[in-house]
Image (cartoon, rainbow, N blue to C red; front, side, top):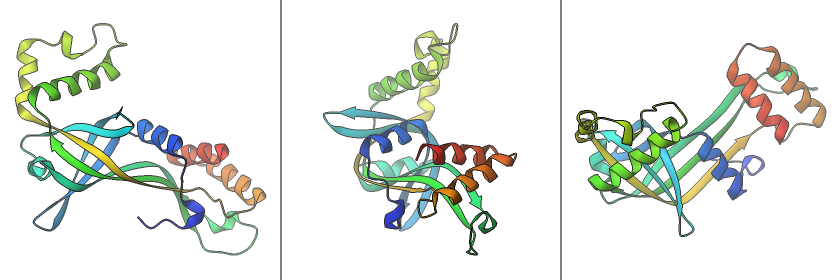
Amino acid sequence: MYIPKHYKENDVQEIKAFMKEHQFVTIVSNEDGKPIATHVPINIHEKNEALYITGHFAKGNKQWETLNRATNILVIFQGPHAYISSTWYEEEDVPTWNYQSVHVYGDSKILSESELIEDLTYLLDKHEKHRTNGATWGNMSENTRKQIKGIVGFEIEVKEIEAAYKLSQKRSVKEKNNIINELEKTDSNLDSAIANVMKRT
């Protein structure tokens, strides 16, 4: 990913927090030289100072076959983004786009059924345990659990992380505040989200 120096994020803890906040990702791998991609929810784990990404594909989605002992699998985490009008600047310039994006590269493997069950249990607990009679693995019937036969789990060990936060860092404080104010005037949830991020930077 091309990242101008002004927009490169280097704070590892910040990047990890961003990844954990945006756990619906794009997995990119190669099949006979052609890039293929799937959008999936994932889990993030830290073990022995290493970072791992786990998730699953529908068995009918043959991309999972490209993750069996593969290297340089790309995982894209996308945050909020917004169009920035140049009319919001003090002097004439071109419009642009503000955004947050993290690219992760790693080595992958396919999970065993027991590892997949462990990962599904973690995923369901994360989203369901706080609900009354939530749809956790433990609360599911044996018949429902059998649907695990229709998915394939994967694990990616993270080897490299690139993070780009383009948030009007090159603009003056006055311009940045004006951009935030203009973004907050729109009806776009994405505009509001990027404005909130800009306020924290």
